[in-house]
Length: 231
Image 1 (cartoon, rainbow, N blue to C red):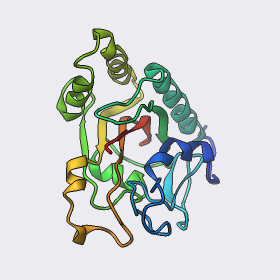
Image 2 (image 1 turned 60 degrees about the horizontal axis):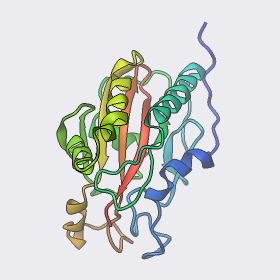
Image 3 (image 1 turned 30 degrees about the horizontal axis):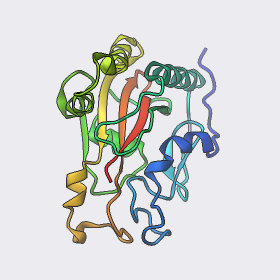
């Protein structure tokens, strides 16, 4: 017998903390603006379901309790696999990946992780001109080249947690698709014409989200969230 969907969630400070650094404007520009110097809107909130939205928006929740339990379980396991490994990828800061999920509502039908899905799941809180790169979660592509560059002068052990993470995602039967997502490219942001800045943007943000994600059969995004600081 299907369980009654969960329809009430409140903003969750712990879930917000995972993405908070990408919301910080570091006192640059108008603090009432959404993106004065940041990639995720300063008006963003994260609910206990993992859903991201603007603070002023009304959100409809209808989450299967078992799906939410699965999201929490898988995100915790993914974080444990990386075990405080720094995101790196050209970052000027040392920051680890954290477990991340956005639970889908009952009946959502999604089969692939795409740029459009990522923007929608972030509740349109992402800096509008930001580029999003969605690549296979494999030892290939731009994302992996950045990992390789960071580890080029390290021992082979540097790559072990990354390879374990890739294998973990591949081996999870709950996922129908897995991808690595890069939100923001430093050069594209630096070269963005000022005429394309949203209202209130002083400079483009430099704390760029990096995610390893799986898509569950129920339509939820689950995995890891981190960021690369391109200052």
